[in-house]
Image 1 (cartoon, rainbow, N blue to C red):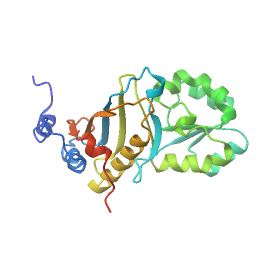
Image 2 (cartoon, rainbow, N blue to C red):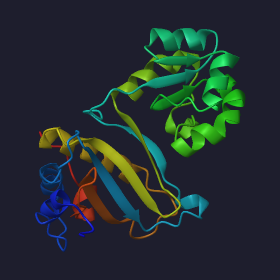
Image 3 (cartoon, helix red, strand yellow):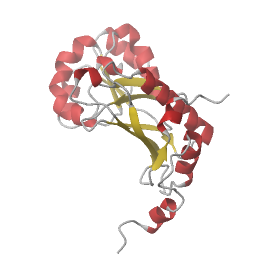
Image 4 (cartoon, rainbow, N blue to C red):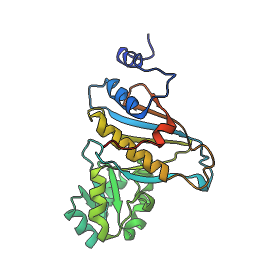
Length: 239
């Protein structure tokens, strides 16, 4: 029995595994090799030359993709008083401003994509770490998800518009979704350029010499397509 299905092998046959593609060519190929019945996500995976054990070699930031992620983003806000009122006015899908809602989240309620909190709520939110942490949902100032009540409108608007957090994991890799296979090639490319610009600006002080060793793009469940790292870091948005 083959290790991969027929559709995967057909997609893989279109990819030159020994080639580093230019970004636009690679993204177009990722669209072409998407074979799932659902609208596949387009994923970027980067291998860095950083040492995740070193404090001065950490990468963590956010980027607002110009064309979003192609999905409805559900936002939960931890806030009380003015913060809760501002969150509801800004279109938050769920506002956790009472102990009952907090208990539901502690019990496993995670029907949301982004969690935002006001600073005064972080004491209570911290107790939900075992639920939110493993899912990447814990509010964090560095990710722009801990904000004062007066900034709630902006934070929610950005989250719904396609703000994406990226961070270095324990294996020195960075993984980011930049859209859907149904996006036209130009929109995917412009989202990719925005991401790479943010990655370049987030280069840590402790990064000496080579920064990004390898970049691969693929549609969900599709084959990996290598992108030339130097071309990716110097990519510019088309007119």
